[in-house]
Image (cartoon, rainbow, N blue to C red):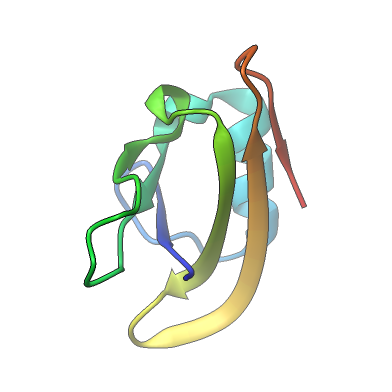
Length: 81
């Protein structure tokens, strides 16, 4: 399932904005759990457990204009595509 995403507590305007902020300061990016089953991480990206996250933006409920994939490794490195 896709998650929502925030940059500085606001919905991002583009995937490019998310990529730039992840590179600059991942603490300013937050994932939003959208699953009704409660099995998704919800919170700041820098504190997320290692794993694979798929996001949609700018708003998962109202406007799905872009999608992206975030991979966080055990060593804390983060890649986005």
